[in-house]
Amino acid sequence: MSNKIFIFDTTLRDGEQVPGCQLNTIEKIEVARQLEKLGVDVIEAGFPISSPGDFNSVVEISKAVTNPTICALTRAVKKDIEVAADALKFAKRGRIHTGIGTSPYHIKYKLNSNEDEIVERAVAAVKYAKSFVEDVEFYAEDAGRSDNAYLARVVEAVIKAGATVINIPDTTGYCLPSEYGEKIAYLVNNVPNVDKAILSTHCHNDLGMATANTLAGVVNGARQVEVTINGLGERAGNTSLEEVVMAMRSHHDLDYDTSIDTKQLMKSSKLVSTLMRMPVQANKAIVGRNAFAHSSGIHQDGVLKNRENYEIIDPAEVGVEESSIVLTARSGRAALKHRLHVLGYTFEDEELNDIYNRFLDLADKKKDVADEDLEALAGTERIKEDRSIKLESLQVISGSSTIPTATVAVSFSGDVFTETASGNGPIDAAFSAVKNLVKRKVHLEEFLIQAITRGSDDLGKVHVQVEHKGKTYYGFAANVDIITASVEAFLDAISKIG
Ligand code: KIV
Ligand code: ZN
Image (cartoon, rainbow, N blue to C red):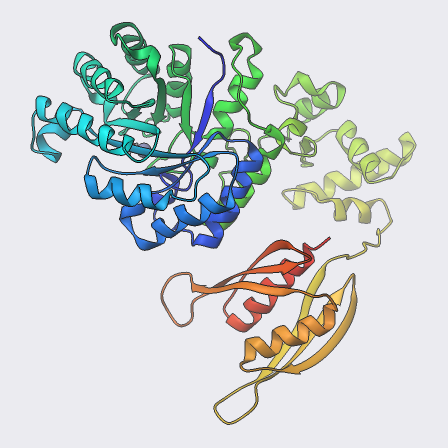
């Protein structure tokens, strides 16, 4: 059996089902492109029959992304499968993911059916999907609570019908790792044609065991794992991509291989968290703010002597620049000396003692001591050069009987420039003023304003897509003033032009 584990990312489908996490098409494309950079094998881009927005996202992601297979979800229903096939028409490699419930709960209470009929419906769905695409994945919903012998019967039948991948979801997050591992092992040992398909894990985290269950599935023969960035997903979430990948990378004894570029993990996590407005818990494994932060004096001293004393992963491996030594009242001289050294200051012991005493006084009053505090303590203020492009002020005149005019002041690396322009509306006028200021040929390709909730006093979210010399740049901003948000999003995109 090969040791390659295929990474199937469902952030844009199962992850996006989380209330409040819905993304528009531009945002989904941005995530999909990042997932491609990350190196996932499959992107589950949506459930096309569920809404025109989902259908459109699958179409646009299929166009925007080249390397990963694009997968579309369906129920075991003809119309779903037809719509999914249509949405996948631009995919270089398209996969239909169809399935039906196989647990006693689903068969009786959800589908009002019986075991024989479910097998028939599963086989018919796979055969129908197969008439559109070669790559068909079948999911046995609630497999976690399904009887293993019945599950084996369903799996054998759908593989015979042409399924290339078989997904065994622990839909309710019920299984224990030993139980889930045994389920996969049972299928490996009792489905005669199992070698004709890849078994896939799909675990939910209701009991906090999604990662453990996924690894148990892999150890017992699954060769695809269904995961999401930051573990986003229904209820308590899905298996987190970064946890599974780093568990495999860190345990060389497991000898599994994925195509993930782990240096892209932090960037992917931040992008998904920002766009989905789902903060990552500080102590989240791998990508949490504290995942590589050391605050106790003993640990800080140990890490400074040798990182591996207290870290099993080199932060650089997951795209984090360095372990952080959080300076608090519990930090020792070694940590303070190190931080000052990083900031460019070296002190003799006596001077350091003096700074250390003043540092302890300050740390008793403040929770964390920041670099700026240290610089003040060290008696020097570093002059920071601000290289960013920033909106300094914006004034617009608009109304039914006036020509919309905007005056925009923007700072470039700290120097402020002002420009006034008119347009066919206040945003058009402000954008014209910005274009005059940046003196670059930028073409606005997409512009989208959304309210985050519902009220007229709500924050407006603005996404823009601009083109410069054949390359596309995305910008985002949120503000209670939609014209300000628009200009900030425009500047955000422009600031990304190299
Ligand atoms: O959790 C689940 O069972 C699912 C299926 C639709 C694949 O997400
Ligand atoms: Zn799921």
